[in-house]
Length: 372
Image (cartoon, rainbow, N blue to C red; front, side, top):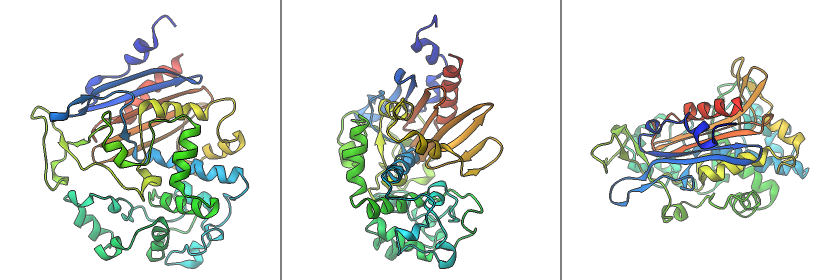
């Protein structure tokens, strides 16, 4: 290749796509070939640049980490992905116990359990959720009360809350993205694995993969000098809007923090660490055995002729290629990761403004990588 990677991939990334800031990284054949920060990680008095090492919320990209933790239990023969969830969590049930007794671990991870998509309890557990103007309306829409929310103090409590949930579809008959399913998944990990999911992620998974800047701890992130703050263009969602830069359509949003919700979307990482994470899936000896990884990538549900959902990952078929991908979003956050294991390539986009077209940027980088 005559051009440098910085030029070749950099030409596919437009800095104007980042309303505030973000970072992009690309991997090929086990190494990071491109990484660059764009714009600002913070605005106002604490203004600083966004770098490939800036800690930021990755939201639902977190789900792939949670799915991987359960596959490790399957590797150790402690968990059968086809087994009913009640085999391991006898207190799990929905309003229709006969139906929910049939929900399998695989269905839990693939959003085919029959759960409704708008349960709401997961994000309403955020520490500072009352700083959003939509808190009361979302709570009412989801049929939740302050009493219910104050009673949720553990992931087991979230699992038990599902006893009030009506299934709009029989298990396995439809696809509906239910983010809270991944809180149940972490509860499942703890009961089967006999250890804290948080401890396992921090001490084993992140450590083993060399993800030194990846963490579940919001306090650690907030006090880190190279960490992002978050911004939105939609002032209507905020109780007390603050616009730190008069020249930008960017109002600071509450810091995304939700310790109980970490398995569904509250892991923090960097573009560089996520690039290493993608690479760990595409080595000759991946951290999950290849036969289990193939199962992780196999669509459990096909949304159409191209897109599907597997175990903690979305899938996208383009011709003869299968792309494995996932995005994440929250007020002030957009993230996207994508890889083609057969080609050994992957791309990462993280950002701190919810109007950043993270998927489009990721697609542009992947197109460049596929040309090589």
